[in-house]
Image (cartoon, rainbow, N blue to C red; front, side, top):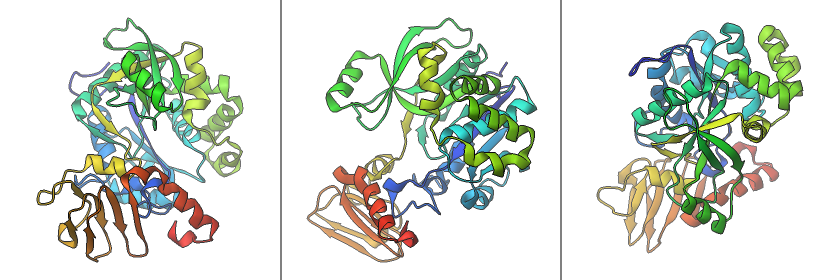
Length: 367
């Protein structure tokens, strides 16, 4: 049950807050990842914005799962988070162990609990439309399916996975619900254009809504050792340090969602809201408004530190130095206290390769 405009009974928001956002280096690093930053100019970090968006649906039933390096910062940014609302994972194991651990804990608290997992570092516009989609997803999840929110494609993107929608489902309270035929990996340009033209595909944003017990039971089918270990940790938290390293490092999609779709256990609610994973500087630039006095220029930081003449692109002055660009189109300049990164928006996806080179060179101080 849920109130039309209020919280949803028995619904828990799970927010996995991991990853180092290497495509946003040198702003985002392993010790200070992108979810801790205000990358949209809203005055709130991506993590805070995620929780703000979800709280009307669940008030204090929020659980953030993050690593030990980020636990203190997450607690500082979310002072109203309940004491047991912060789950600290001993080491990164990708999204399935993180979400699965939250599910195992919730299963013991309330066997009927429905959880919604939403990454801490995404940007969403039209919060109310997002919440309406979550409400529909919860109604479908109560029928025993794993439910995902599918984002309507705005262009033939090759950087996202896709969801192939199936036939409409007849579920009370969820008029837009459809089955899922399959999850598809990132396509090439021609295939992405075909997906877009067909109208049968949605972007996979990694948002899942499911009963905690159903998720653990699915995991017991497809990853039985992990399910056993996670339930053992939830029963006896002292075993976390012992069992966590034994868990397979795997994302929720290949672990559960993809095989469950083959078994007709997955549904999708088509998203009717704007979404961006803020995955690289081209993406970040798209969620920032143009500088009012310099058309074609996006600035993250103090505008007085940026001088652009016959130049366009994205500039992040973070060191206090003045940045000047002359006669350059679609550039990306990021200036921090210990590193300057210059590229083009076209090559923004490749920034993570620089991080790998720095690691190989032993420059962990920069990564």
